[in-house]
Image 1 (cartoon, helix red, strand yellow):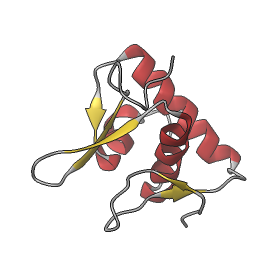
Image 2 (cartoon, one colour):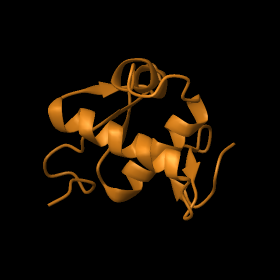
Image 3 (cartoon, helix red, strand yellow):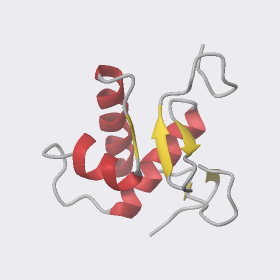
Length: 104
């Protein structure tokens, strides 16, 4: 299930979205992702990588869609940014210093 209202990446091909009314388990995933990033500030990964590595063990059985929605929350808050690699792969990481998405 995907929700609507926040856009994660600005590509028309692969828009990820989350709702204003975020389910508690998705908010918990967003918290876990932010905690991982806090301890690993140079980490960058795909949705699958975040699900399999950043969240491994902490939340077994988490769905790909729930991770996408949690990422959407963090992008909407400016805690993550989407970067597109030359091959088109999208990875998520902390905003670069000085970027418009960087939190002050």
